[in-house]
Image (cartoon, rainbow, N blue to C red; front, top):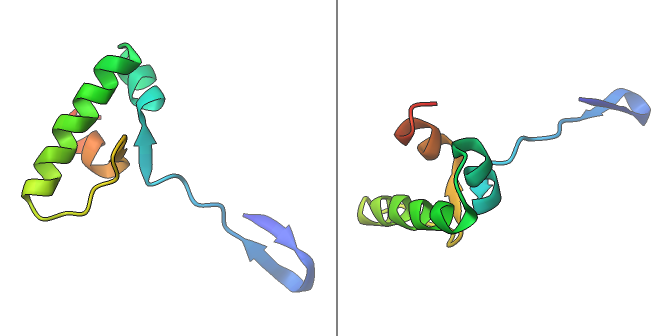
Length: 68
Protein backbone atom coordinates (compact mmCIF):
# COMPACT_ATOMS: atom_id res chain seq x y z
CA UNK A 1 0.00 0.00 0.00
CA UNK A 2 1.12 3.52 -0.75
CA UNK A 3 0.59 6.43 1.64
CA UNK A 4 -1.59 9.25 0.27
CA UNK A 5 -2.77 12.60 1.66
CA UNK A 6 -5.60 12.58 4.24
CA UNK A 7 -4.52 9.22 5.68
CA UNK A 8 -5.86 7.36 2.64
CA UNK A 9 -3.98 4.45 1.14
CA UNK A 10 -3.92 3.08 -2.36
CA UNK A 11 -3.71 -0.67 -2.77
CA UNK A 12 -1.93 -1.85 -5.89
CA UNK A 13 -3.56 -5.06 -7.03
CA UNK A 14 -1.56 -7.87 -8.54
CA UNK A 15 -2.55 -8.75 -12.10
CA UNK A 16 -5.33 -11.31 -12.34
CA UNK A 17 -4.32 -12.44 -15.82
CA UNK A 18 -1.03 -13.65 -17.25
CA UNK A 19 0.22 -12.80 -20.74
CA UNK A 20 2.08 -15.23 -22.99
CA UNK A 21 5.48 -13.73 -22.12
CA UNK A 22 4.82 -14.33 -18.42
CA UNK A 23 3.64 -17.90 -19.02
CA UNK A 24 6.72 -18.54 -21.16
CA UNK A 25 9.00 -17.20 -18.45
CA UNK A 26 7.34 -19.22 -15.68
CA UNK A 27 7.44 -22.46 -17.66
CA UNK A 28 10.75 -21.91 -19.45
CA UNK A 29 9.21 -22.27 -22.92
CA UNK A 30 8.88 -20.14 -26.05
CA UNK A 31 6.12 -17.54 -26.38
CA UNK A 32 4.52 -19.47 -29.24
CA UNK A 33 4.26 -22.54 -26.98
CA UNK A 34 2.85 -20.32 -24.23
CA UNK A 35 0.16 -19.04 -26.62
CA UNK A 36 -0.75 -22.66 -27.44
CA UNK A 37 -1.10 -23.48 -23.74
CA UNK A 38 -3.15 -20.33 -23.10
CA UNK A 39 -5.44 -21.18 -26.01
CA UNK A 40 -5.95 -24.70 -24.65
CA UNK A 41 -6.64 -23.54 -21.08
CA UNK A 42 -8.99 -20.81 -22.31
CA UNK A 43 -10.92 -23.41 -24.31
CA UNK A 44 -11.37 -25.44 -21.10
CA UNK A 45 -12.66 -22.35 -19.30
CA UNK A 46 -14.97 -21.46 -22.18
CA UNK A 47 -16.50 -24.96 -22.09
CA UNK A 48 -17.16 -24.46 -18.38
CA UNK A 49 -19.04 -21.24 -19.15
CA UNK A 50 -16.40 -18.71 -18.10
CA UNK A 51 -15.66 -15.52 -19.99
CA UNK A 52 -12.16 -15.63 -21.44
CA UNK A 53 -9.68 -13.00 -22.58
CA UNK A 54 -7.91 -14.13 -25.77
CA UNK A 55 -4.11 -14.15 -25.36
CA UNK A 56 -4.31 -14.06 -21.57
CA UNK A 57 -5.09 -16.65 -18.91
CA UNK A 58 -6.50 -16.34 -15.41
CA UNK A 59 -3.54 -16.43 -13.04
CA UNK A 60 -5.48 -18.56 -10.54
CA UNK A 61 -6.57 -21.13 -13.14
CA UNK A 62 -3.07 -21.30 -14.64
CA UNK A 63 -1.51 -21.93 -11.23
CA UNK A 64 -4.04 -24.69 -10.50
CA UNK A 65 -3.45 -26.43 -13.83
CA UNK A 66 0.35 -26.34 -13.73
CA UNK A 67 0.55 -27.08 -10.00
CA UNK A 68 2.35 -23.90 -8.93
